[in-house]
Image (cartoon, rainbow, N blue to C red; front, side, top):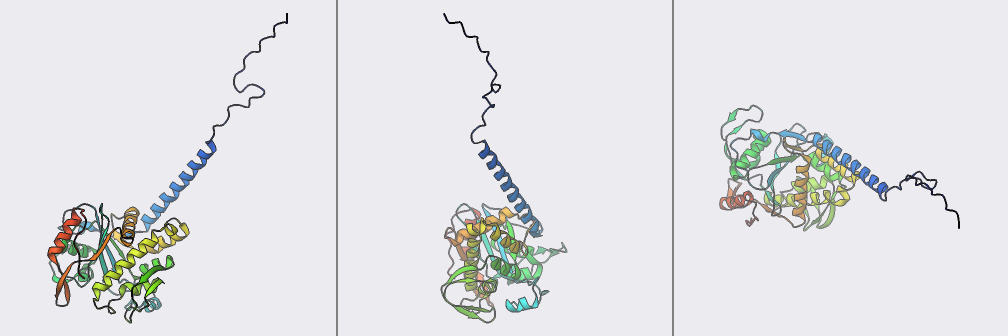
Amino acid sequence: MDPQRPAVPSQPRGSGPYDAGRRPRRGGKAKRILISVLVILLVVVGGTYLWADSQLHKDVDLSKVIERPGEGEGTNYLIVGSDSRKGMSAAQRKSLHTGGSAEAGQRTDSMMILHVGSNGPTMISLPRDSNVTIPKFQGSESGTMRPAMGANKLNAAYAFDGPQLLVRTVEYNTGLHIDHYAEIGFTGFANIVEAMGGVEMNLDKGFKDKWSGADFKAGPQTLNGAQALAYVRTRHAFAGSDLDRTKNQQKFLAALANQAASPSTFLNPFALYPVMGAGLDTLVVDKDMNPYLLARMFFAMKDVNSGEGKSMNMPISGSVGGNLTWDMPKVKQLVNELKNDEPVTVTSNR
């Protein structure tokens, strides 16, 4: 009978000569890398957001606008292109065909309402020669009440007292609440286009205009900063003058937004940051604007370019004293549709 083998006492896990301890869980390293990447991404995105927000010129105080219409559904932006020459040298003013001086009084070359809602964006150009009523208002700097100025061109409101009076005049004549304001001058506009390496356009027909410096042939082409500025400013070359110009402005802004929001720009920091820097440097907005709302505005303009939105001029019925009169029954219907965030059915024949 074989002798009984002595019992081997049990050993705690990890204490034996061949047990190096608990095996590391599978995927632990990958998980740590993923967490690290997410943390870096959050830091970069958060830092970019804070930097962009700090660069915005939040100079427009919409709380000073009096007797405002009630808010509706969706968000309404008033987008303005001014003829500001701030920061331009004499050589730049000559090459860009802007004329005037760096200290010249400002006017608005383009005004658009962009409605962003659940039925796709709608972009509506407001011709600068629109015949409107400039109502009583609170002075943007003095704070004192000023009497109504009566019938006038729409862009005169901006010339008289800047963005706040322009918003007041647009709201008074349309009944539509403006939620946010964004304005860019000549310099910033040209710089954005240059930072993007130009903007691709396909022109239906060529045209020339000695006043803006435009000289275009029909067909696809890439517009640099000076060409882009000439394209959106030209009106003397068209039979419809300002009404044709507003259509070109819509086309260009939608194309610019489409290119700026494309993956090749939006996801490429070497392309995105120069574009953002060029735009934020001269962009003037309201005090409640932030980078998220600004990005939302640009993506809405991109949607207009891709056919997911609608672009039009404010409905026109005729003219008085050389100024364009709005078709008020159509304007009222349009505003009601925007306020209720309904699909826009109103059309403009010009």
